[in-house]
Every structure is written in C-alpha cells, then in structure tokens.
Amino acid sequence: MKPYKVILSGGGTGGHIYPAIAIAREIEKRYPDTEFLFVGAKDRMEMEKVPQAGFDIEGLWISGIQRKLSVENLKFPFKLMSSLWKSNSIIKRFQPDVVIGTGGFASGPLLKRATSKKIPALIQEQNSYAGITNKLLSKSVQKICVAYDEMHRFFPQGKIIKTGNPVRNDLLTISSKRTEAIATYGVSSDKKTVLIIGGSLGARAINELVSKELDFFTKHDVQVLWQTGKLYYEQYKHLASNDVKVMAYIDQMDLAYAAADIIISRAGAGSVSELCIVGKATVFIPSPNVAEDHQTKNALAITAQNAAVLIRQKELDAMFENELESLIQDTERREALGMAIKALALPDATKHIVDEVEKLLPNRE
Image 1 (cartoon, rainbow, N blue to C red):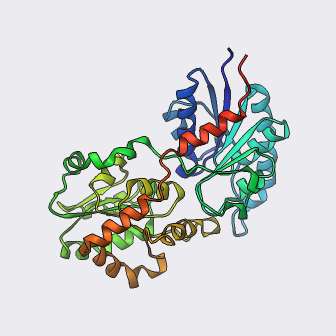
Image 2 (cartoon, rainbow, N blue to C red):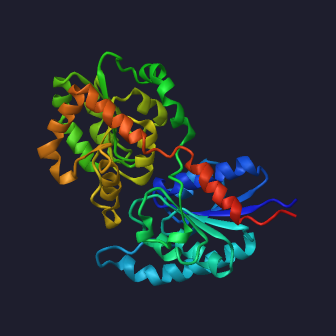
C-alpha cells in the first residue's frame, strides 16, 4: 500500500500553527507511514515551530494586507502571484491526497491551487468570527471544521462540522497535577494563585496592568505566575519576588494551569479552547488590535454562557480591581465559572477533525 501524502497549511500565529501540528500528529497515529509537508509564510513563526515539531515546511512569500496605506500593500499583488506560482509547483511535485488549511495568509494560495486541481480539501476555522482567508476558501473546499455555533453566517451550512479546536493532550489530566504544579512553580498551596498569560510574544497592555497592580495582589495575599512574553521579559523581570514569578515563556502550560485558581488571558481561539478544557475561573482581556476584533467575539461567545469574565482593554482601570477582588474572595463564584466554562469544552476535537479528513482520503491500493 502506498503511503498517504498530506499537505497542511496555516500560520502567522500559534493559533494557526499548533492546530495544524495536532492534526498531523493524529493522522500520523492512525497512518504511521504518511508523508507530510507543511506550507507556511516565509519569516513567520511556523518556519521555526514546525521543524521543531519534526515536520518539513516550505515557505511562501505572502503576508496580509495592512489596514493602513503602506509600501507593503503595494507588494501584495506580486506576493500573491509568487505564492500561487510556488503553491502550484509544490502541489505538482508533492502530489497530495488531501490538503488541510488552518487559517493564516499562506493557506489561501495553497488551498486555492489545490482545489482548482480537484484535490480534496478541508479547512479548520478556530474563531467565532471567520477569517477572510477561510471565508474565501469556503466555496471550494469539501469540509469546514468549526469550534462555535452560528458559523453558517460565514460558510455554506452543508459543509460545516462543529468539532472544536485541537488542544494539547496534556491538558486533559490537569486535575491530577496540582501537587506537582505547586512544587514546580514554588507556590504555596495556602494562597490563591493568579496565572497571567498574554500569548507567546506577550501583551503590552496586560503587562502594564500587572506591573501597576502588584500592590493590589500583595494586599490580597495572592501569588502571581506572570508570563510576560519574550518581547517584554527584560522590561519586567526585576519585579519578580517570592509571590511573583516572572517568566518570558511557560513551557509546561499544563502545570501552570493546574497551579492556578484564577486565569487572566487574551482571547485567541486556541487559548479559549484550552481554557474551556482547563475549567478554571477566567478573566478574558481580548486584544483590540486583531482583524475583525475576533478576540472580543470569541470572549463574548463564552461570557454569553456566564462562563467567564470579560474586561475590555479600555475598561481595565475602571473594572479590573473590582472583578478580581470578587473572584479572589468568592469561592462559589470561582467554582461556578470553572464548571460553566468546562461544560463548553470539546476535548476530542482533533480526533473529530481527522475523522473528517479520513472521509476525504482515497482508498489505498
């Protein structure tokens, strides 16, 4: 039997890359001899993260259109033509049985060329508000895997399958890791722990907020696990103390979640899906600087179920201390929020997505 060949395309942010890697690993588990090729955007983080995960990747010269006038926008038509041409040659050479897109600039040209050659294709949309690339591709792909209800606003109803977003398997067992987590991070089990995550690069507004509110945390006898992101670590590392652990990046995210009583996070699709599985009281502070304000829409989909707290960035000064004080002091409210967000979890998302991929694969000779 000849091995299956699968191209996965997506990137720009971890929210597009990690789902693609999770899907590839699940396919590999079912068909160990599968040949994989990832296609990303040159100079974006997928060119580093995908090889680290053990897969081959090729880069396209592509980026998004800036929302303001810029020289980069003038290059866009040339980048698009270059990427379509290179996608064509990649597909011709690799001869994939199926192509999977997880969003981001690179997946547009690659899936456009694949579907024009009648290669079966599936896209996975992580957000509650669909990205422009996936909206454009939805007409020509066979299946669209989504994580939220009401996605027929963006996509043809007959192609939609609600699967959820792929998440790391190690998150499924965090309830048994509390003792290990407390030891790993050197926090006390007698005090409340607040985990603050602003994405792998960091979030300036959240970091500024935390640095201002350290006295507030001290006053309430709260410990802080603070991921600044690698862009901001040097600026804030001097604020570390016994009760404030300052880290550029958290490698063992499962243990950080296990140690936390309250989590403060951006509302990227991957983070939201992870936090549903984690099932802890969560405060979302969505980034207002993303396309279509999709992080706020992701957070609203959760708060509409009374399953998290939403504080918009512009409301932080007015709302943060009151909301946090309430969560720190009210055990029942914390537990209710944790149970409500966990009820929204879709822990088998990766398996369900690959079930749909399997339906597109040809019979092996």
